[in-house]
Image 1 (cartoon, rainbow, N blue to C red):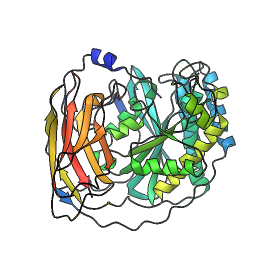
Image 2: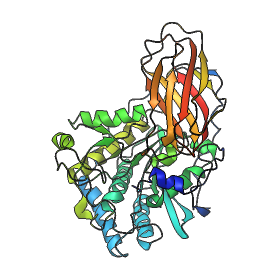
Image 3: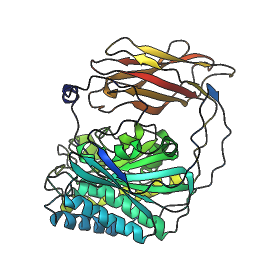
Image 4: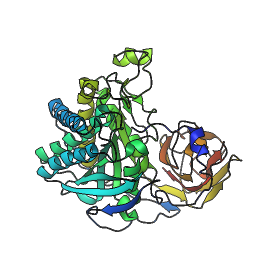
Length: 465
């Protein structure tokens, strides 16, 4: 996981001019001179343009197959290989260093032998060449892609076995289990290992920004796994998408393992690159430099008052820096999510949708603005799980406070401002219990920028009943 970028430091960089753009259109800073070795498979029509009001009938879904147990010994064997690669290459597997490319070569050889179609995507950042590794499993609907990934680079100060050999190994072994089981999902499966995450999510941003819009539209969801074997672990689940979050939380609950919502890594790992272009994301995390509280130690065991990973971004992040129980549980959860989310075809629409795609400028550190959505022709109240699709283009989402206003003016908070929310754009679907509100009337998305030097606009808002 990359280091946090403090709000004040980011502003000091002079990024004051807002270039109005579609999400994901800009290439990550510092990335240039790309060579795409091969393109993503499949070609299809662009997603249908949405009107002011759309409706669709739910599609039948097949019951997903059960995922196999992922052998811990196999995952640890991958970590041993990554450690050996680091030891033979100056002690690290960082971007621009030989240990990184050797790590990708190891992963690629395993996938090639298992029958995957692999692609090395080259980019340049900081004057050094980097690569992403993409592996496609033959079969499945190419218009509905489930993708899982992890960053494969370390920091230059260590071997990066927890950060992020653990996620890389868990994803690799899940991909190999797909081949061993001859699993035939409804959706097309794709796996990715990202370069230069530790210097700013460069590889994953390069990947999504260089996918044609039609190909981005085919990715139903992206699952991210960054640090899943921390030595003093917590069990954290991303809350960016309710359906994906539930898949993970239900799996852990069935094993009497409590979970918490992941906040330490918000905007700091590769899921942010996908989320910022409107792709649904989810994932798992076991903690980095934050301190485990007494309540968390009571819940999960381990040592209160100590970091989840005392070797975070340090030379001691070796194979000795792994909690086997956490790595085992999370590797099995990775496989469970891949099997569950790929087995049922496309996600069916929930009901009738009402949308406003007119742009509304958000003034810098100014008054709140609203984007109205008129709902008519319905009976009764809004649902207890009203889905609010928000697309706000903004240079710093941490400045934004976002609410949904019911027709009577009642406000439902969707997002608070926060200095740790260091990413661009707000592209997400929120669930609101609006069951006390009549469905018909003018609903409004309200957005306010509460700090200076960053601007943007409401791109669209959609209510789904």
